[in-house]
Amino acid sequence: MFKPMRRSLITAGTLMMFTRPLRAAPKPVTLIVPYAAGGPNDNFARLLAESMGGQLGRSFIVENRPGANGIIGATFAARAPADGSTLFMGGSGPISLNILLRPQLAYGFDSFESVAMLFDGPLTITVSSKIGVNSLKDLVAYAQSTNRPLTYGSLGPGSVTDLYGLILSKTLGIPLTSVAYKSTPTSLLDLIAGRNDLSYMTPIALVDHQKSGAIKILALTTNQRDPALPEVPCVTELGYPKLQASYWTALHAPKGTPANIIQEYSAAAIKAVQSDSFRQMLASNGQTEKAGGPEKLDAQLQADRAYWGEVITENHIVLD
Image (cartoon, rainbow, N blue to C red):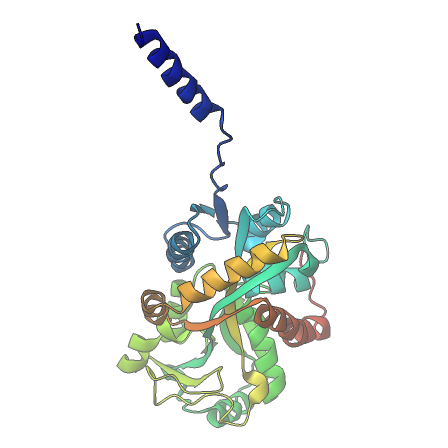
């Protein structure tokens, strides 16, 4: 005769369990990457997302939104809700150069919160071996002996490689002309063949060709030598500190994202980038860990305004 009572007690307990408020799972964090899947930046983003997700106990999803020099991805991220559910893997091109070059852009420096500086990489001042130049001093003498501007391969108007050529021209006092390419490999082939005199490609793209003697890296655009290229001087030791330049990658969030969330993501990102696995991936791609919090990224953005902004203003460069 007690069985009905037992049934009613079990039913009541079950009802109580289902009527308790359930704690909602955290919303997944979408990491917007302004480049196509499969490239180095995509690989960096996926390793970063995996590490941050594990640290924070949240799901991180990498979403590729390539196109228009990073503008498509950056615009989407700038317009996303400022609730911590969106991060943007920005850098020199998608953020600084686009904003400085394009007055009609749908976003600006004030469209984002700085989360973390991640890593950067140097450029090189490289010549074709066919022109017989072995130093920056030789390069100046060679330019003065010709009756034409020296040509250098770039990735198009407003790119880091295009603008750096203008800075080099002014600093060394030699005439240079940019030749635009759609890809680095095509530009490299023309450099090796001697169809261009100069290039500012990254060291990782040139190491094997340097060893073979097809090209000559005159200097790295850094303040110290690279252990992978111990024979190559840096621009600061050669007396050209104004030629120091790099391209960087960082994490940004939509403007208004709460400060406590920014700090949480920043700490996780820094820990991820400073891990052995991430550093190994960086080294294999010619990049250097430069992890730091929002203040470090803010300083980089300010430095870009001064460095790249000056050459853009002086040469009246405006892009649509």
